[in-house]
Length: 116
Image 1 (cartoon, helix red, strand yellow):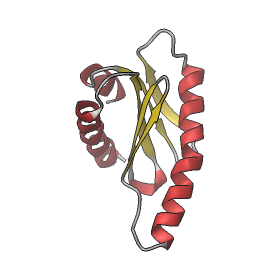
Image 2 (image 1 turned 90 degrees about the horizontal axis):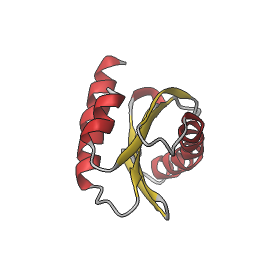
Image 3 (image 1 turned 180 degrees about the vertical axis):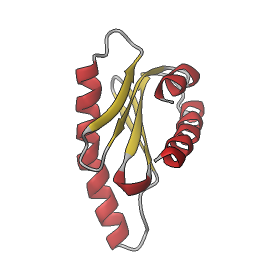
């Protein structure tokens, strides 16, 4: 599923599927400049921001986080919630629009969720 996502999403450099603690479950690197280690680190670091937002949004009555988009100097990180605290993250090249990639990420998240 991750390989298909990375192929379908314009500008995708890689994708990582993580558990509720930020530990990677599976990953796919498409960009040779992006190592598996880099993806594992991105996934783990996203957990801190994701869990903090999740806790505060729920405590304030806004509900759980569904999707997160972070723009960075080197590109964009798209993250989508899955059941039981899991999440899937897509790493995009800089300067690429992210709407189509976000759509593809949402589609893949539904596929993964149904397989969990």
